[in-house]
Image (tube, rainbow, N blue to C red; front, side, top):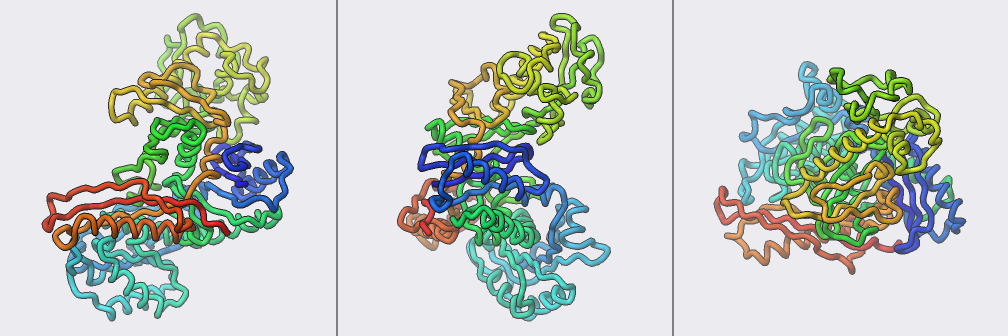
Length: 548
């Protein structure tokens, strides 16, 4: 028996599953204090099912806590960064590409003396040293950080995914100077690519204090509900990590929401290769399933204005959801580029403009979690996408009489615009013109009322509104290895075996049962521009949760 929880910008969903069977589910508005919303959702599914709490084997939580912290610039811990690579990399110091406001909060302003340091060390792609490691130099830097009163520290080194020795030695020295140091090594977080990997490490360190408070808050909420089962946090590759691992690596939760939806869509539909359209209250996320897991983004991913390169799902988001504001205007009138303000969307404006006389703007603004208060069908005064769908007769939600006055041509125009937006987004995610199955999930998927061009079929499975929570509940535990190997020094088979062992070890450390580890993805990329027959090998391993 598992409970899956997924926190979105509009709703917090929870589902209780007995094996592959959904026992009960709920969808409640997300609260300002996310933990309160999670507790409410948990309480609802437990009370609705009448389950004995002692029979719950695990609680899986997908949360937006850490993404929101970066985007909103809140709850971030000032962090120092030590980079090992001198005399190389001087021209691009740490945090060089961060937005000014975020860099000032996390790393300190340039005017006040940013806490970023360069030291000797680093390696070439094949493991050769750039320069000798100098312990005294690192110790002097650690003393400066200690004097500044900081204990959050990120350590990066050139090509550390190939050889992490200098990062590990630096961490030992820093801990001897700052015993309570909170240290993130870039080799444990990111992939090949110094700046992006370093950025990910800094971001991870600045979130660790928040991660500790958040995870402890989840634990307190479960204790209050007398749930003694272990709980896990969703990662952004469709797998889980245990609570202690989540405290160490909070950045690995970024984008776990869309990932959970895709995993849930695969589970509910039985398809392993398809496009998933997840329509929420504020946004629609489109992703691609490959072998039952989300396709991973090949390029650096922007988080709050910072380029990072740790694993992230390849998703495309548009401002379309159940709470999206509809800004109608007669085609004879010029449309304000910013869209008509929703205050002007009074019922009197929406009647009798004549057939085909409407132009519409859908989103990107949304009433979000206030949908049940502000939408017309719920007695509010704001025209939303949900109102239009109800007026069109596709769904019966709220009070139909509240939208009976809407002009039929307006309703048609909005529905056509919504389907056009979804079709364009799906087309952007396809890699060929061949029609592919499209799985539609999410509470806002009532907006999908027509055909999607390029789809071989449109599937809306049972329990589609809570596919994200189901994705969290059925998730496994994973680990990944991304390294460059010189095949002049070892054989291809030896390199593959080494990468597979490393990925498997990381899965076990995250909470997987070592007996059931499975390698689900292996990718090899020859690097012709490097000597020594260099090859980049990426391996992903997954396994079932280890029983407590």
